[in-house]
Image (tube, rainbow, N blue to C red; front, side, top):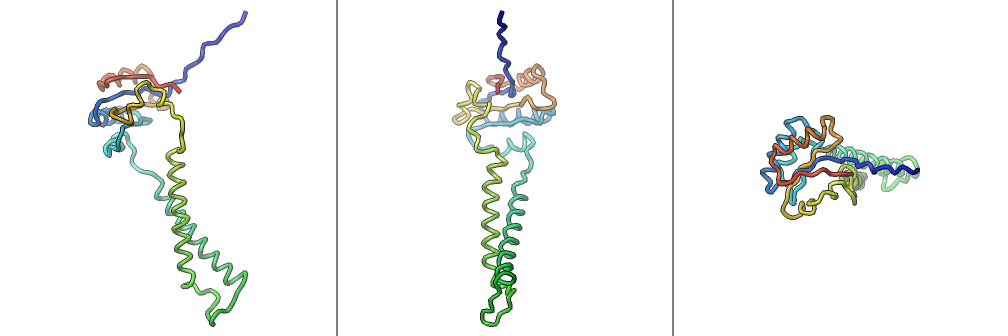
Length: 183
């Protein structure tokens, strides 16, 4: 006798749908105050208050860009130093081999170049992009997030997540719809 196993559905989280941004921000604020930290909001346009309401306060991108700029500047300077002083010293016009004022333009350009590359690739990495698939795409009405609906998700990876408790809490927020999002 062959026993067929039922497929186990893995839960990504619970999603609430709202009609307007003020309801979404108020719900996000209450959710954060209730102790949930793995929450995310989706809207058709940027809402400045939403990032504050879900507890997103800072990013490490500026630090990464600064480090990239310092590494690029030092790399550009020492590349020229190595070429002009150590590898192939050439006396041009009686100037010293380590003529640092002549190194400034290339040092500046290398600073900008590496900082720009770190900014672009750091932003992509920190935003986990490209991401052609995300579990929220499985929600029935999530396509409306690009038009006129607003969504709030409490992820199952939150340390405080208990499905029944989250569902009851989200119902108190009076959403238009409440669905489970599966992976």
